[in-house]
Image 1 (cartoon, rainbow, N blue to C red):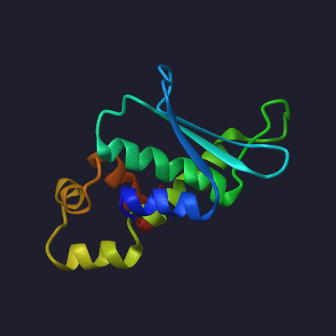
Image 2 (cartoon, one colour):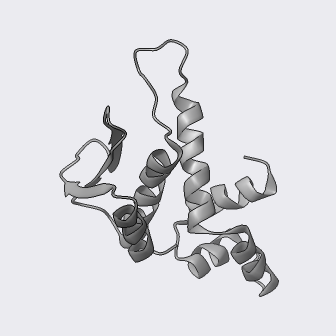
Image 3 (tube, rainbow, N blue to C red):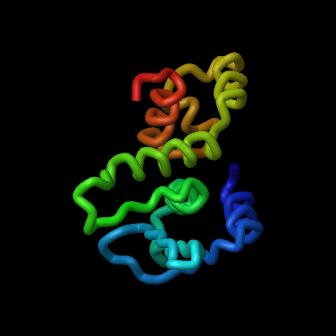
Length: 134
């Protein structure tokens, strides 16, 4: 999914996305007591790539209900972050799209990153996810 498609998905799912200054983080999401989800993105993203990755991750929290309770000793933050990341990986690059790109000769992380217009570190995580080594 490109950035426009991610914003459209948020709109279709009635997830409010706003841009505000977030000097300590690039994005946050939360769900209220009624189950409504809200996303805030930093007004100073370094690139469209970064905005796309952040929005996909925060949508992952909303779409999977992957929110943790910081007051519960039994709720693991890492579990919810993983669920949000997996959703983002699967929607930024499908397994079929990755296979197609590799079959076209894009076998290096940098080649795949350019092909999918993603930062190399995120592309590496996506490849590791699909290879089952993440």
